[in-house]
Image 1 (cartoon, chains in turn red, purple):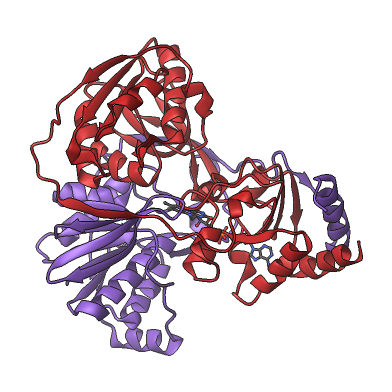
Image 2 (cartoon, each protein chain N blue to C red):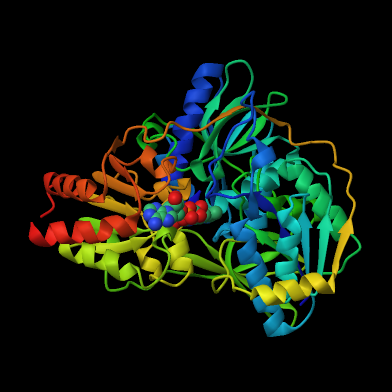
Length: 310
Length: 254
Ligand SMILES: Cc1cc2nc3c(=O)[nH]c(=O)nc-3n(C[C@H](O)[C@H](O)[C@H](O)COP(=O)(O)OP(=O)(O)OC[C@H]3O[C@@H](n4cnc5c(N)ncnc54)[C@H](O)[C@@H]3O)c2cc1C
C-alpha cells in the first residue's frame, strides 16, 4: 500500500511474511502495486518475485471501492493473499473476501501452512490468542502491523514487473476531496526522550494533571491512548499507536493503558517500557520490560514524592 | 438523512476472560456483555447527523445477550426513533453470518446511511461494515471519524494514521465503519432509559441463524502468558515507586 507517494512499512512486512509462506510451499511471492505515477516504486519491491503494477490517475488517492476492486481482480488464483490490517487494508480485505468467496482471517500475527492453511490471531484487544484453520486451500489474511520484520521484505534481487491496464469498468462511488495533515502542536512526542502515557485508567481529564506533574519531573511529555484523544482530554498529536504516532523514547511509562494491538504498534520499540495496570492479564505486560500490578492513583503520589526527594 | 445503526454486544473488556473446558472458545456462559465501543461511536455520529439534517434513526441490535435490551433502550433514550432486536437464541456468530442477518433486516427499508463500528474485538473474519456493503452492493468507507450531509450528498472523513485524514464524497446509500464520532458518545440519564423501557417501543424480529459461510474455524484459544518478558515489580506502591525510580535512573533518565 502507498501513502503520500511512498510504500508503507507494512508493505515490506507482508512481503517478508509472504516469502516465508512461499519458501514452505514452493510458491512465488507476487506484489500488487496500485496507484498513480508509482511504477518507480516497483524497484523497492525486490523482495517479491513478481510485481503487478496498475499505474493509473484514477488511483491517485486511495479509493475504498476502487482499490478493493482492483486488488480483487489482481489476486487471480493465488492461494494465500496477505492484506495489511490498516486503515486502507480494512476497506480492501473484507471486500475481496466477499466478492471472491475466499475465507478471510483478521488480526493475524502468523500464517501457518503445516496441516492445512491457518493462522494465529489476536482477539479481544490482544487478551486472547487463537489458532484458526480455513476450509479449502485458499484464504485471505489481514495481518497486524509489526508481525514480521520489514527489513526481511526489503532484501532481494530484481523482480519481474508486469504493467496491467486499469481493469475497472465501474465509476468510483467515492471521490477523494483532499488529504489533510494534522497541525503540529507545541510538543512533538516522537522526539521526546520520556513519555508518560495515560490510558482510560486515568478516569478523568482532571487526573491528567498528576501524570503531567510526573512528566515534568522527568523532563518529558504526556501522551495518551486513543480513547483519551477521542474524549478530547489530550490533543491529537499526543496519540500513540496505529492511527496516531510511532514513538521510540528512552522511557515509556504507561498508566492505565491495556495494551491493545493498535496501541502496541506505536510503542513496542521504546527502549525501556514500564507499565502500571490493575489487571494482571493486561496485554501491555506482554511488551513492557517492567510491570507493576496496582492502582495508578496509589502509585502516582509516591512516585512524585520519591522523584522530588531524589 | 435516514440512518440505520448496527449494534453488537461484545464481551466486557474489563472482565477476566475465561476459556471453556476444551479450550476452543471463551466460556460464554458467564460472560458479561457491553456494547462494542466503536458501535457506540457509530450511534453518536448518527445522532449528530440526525440533529443536523433531520430524518429518521433506526437501531438494529443483534443477539440474545441479556444486555441487548438495555443497549437498545439506551439508544432510544438518546434519540433513536426505532429499535429492533434481532434474534433471540443466537449463539456466537461469524461476521459473515452477522452481515447476513443485518442485511435481511435492512432489505425493504429505505435508508441513506448504515453506520456501525469499524471493528469489534471478536471480528475474526473481517469488518462487518464492509461485508454488509458488499452484500448490499453499495459503497463503504472504513475508519470514519466524521460525516456530514448536505443536499443529499454525504461527505465523510477517513483516518489513515498519525492524524492524516482524507475527505470523501460518497454516493448514498452507503455503509460507514465508524472509528470515532466527532464528539465522545453522550451519556443519558437513567431516568430517560427507564422512560424508554416503560414506553416499550422495542420490537423483536426472530431470526434463524444462517449456516456459517465464513470458512474459518477456531482450533484453540489461549490467554497469552501474562507479563511474558516483563519483570514484574512486587510489593506495595511505596516499594514499587522506589523500584521504578531505580529503573528510570538506570535507563539514563535524570
Ligand atoms: C483502526 C483502529 C485504530 C486504532 N488506533 C489506535 C491508536 O493509534 N492508539 C491507541 O491507543 N488505540 C487505538 N485504537 C483503539 C484500541 O483498539 C483500544 O481501544 C485502545 O488502545 C484502548 O485504550 P486504553 O488502553 O486506554 O483503554 P482500555 O482498553 O479501556 O484500558 C484501560 C486499562 O486501564 C486499567 N485501569 C483501570 N483503572 C486503573 C487504575 N486505577 N490503575 C491502573 N490501571 C487501571 C484497566 O485494567 C485497563 O487495562 C484503534 C482502534 C482501531 C479500530
